[in-house]
Image 1 (tube, rainbow, N blue to C red):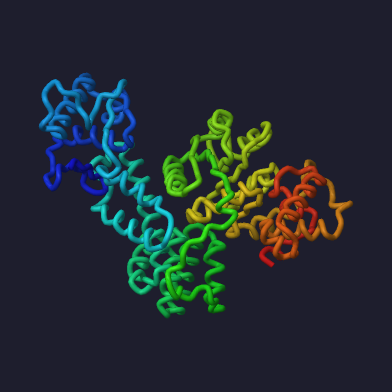
Image 2 (cartoon, rainbow, N blue to C red; image 1 turned 90 degrees about the vertical axis):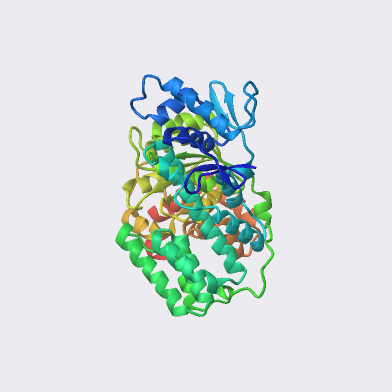
Length: 486
């Protein structure tokens, strides 16, 4: 069987026998077609990407020669005039025709999307990670397309490591996972999910002090590097460990995954990603590709492109950087939200201290998240926006509100006159970040009733997004910065 390997030194094999793919540029042609995932790559694109800047005068004939020799290597028994079946002509270029099982990167991506029972996830991701034999596409590190793809695959590998570990903890493998998770967190100290998994593995292995020590190390690292405190997930884990919460104990037996009513009813989410950094867009693409129910329908690198892409694709949600060249994210968000039936907009920031964040909330975005958030937090943010909940990253909420609460804005809605005690109580709960389900549990009323009441509250105040309720609550003094989290 013919196989292609790129998760390490690039090669093609026939069974156990490696094939001679020729020189570096000739191998790069095959690697580029592999990266395309079976789609055709135009010859002009191959030329531009193999010789960035200054292609040789005979680039076209050189590419044709590479393709001819690669075809002989990949299909040595093919008759001279017989059509190629692996590296095929696909005007205006070429394509690689292979099944997912023949290409290690394709197999790996499919495995990362595995869902279901922990044992199944553990087994598939364990096998997928075994495909890695070194840095992907390292031989082509002088070519921008290879660097971008290598970064995407590396981000996918980190997600696979963390998803496998999460399944392992559910299966009771905490002792065996500690060493690997320690190395993972040390190598990637800004990944909060790495610290969460390490702390939980230590705790379930009877090492509560070491588990809390890991969270302290994470806090120091995040403060030194980014000026941030632990995210909400790690803060909650730390509190639960100090309280020795029962749910942190290892499960008696692997639990079967149940699907909640919300999971069964939530529709797919079509997303546009906007960021001026290609690596950030690549990382977000990996996160969305690995999460069931999400579809990336467009990308943009500045605000002007974002407006165009949104109008062309009509997404459900836009995940957008707030600081970008040409047209910043705040201005772009205002224009997008001014359109008829606009999508939800969630802003991304690096440090969470920009004045524009508060202006963005006033403008009606559904909230904001940190770029450094774990993939799970990004997914939660997008689902929260989809469900109509305001999402303000807990790592910066208190600081943001404390800095800007009390400012007046001529365009802000008038005071809260005319609202009854029940409506004011509801507004307080919304401002503190509770979802409709949590508010329903707090007030002992049906969730549907809460949803209707929030809509009425928005109408009364002339607002159209839940996040604007949060801003209004702080500006009016109904909720104070010190109330966050109470």
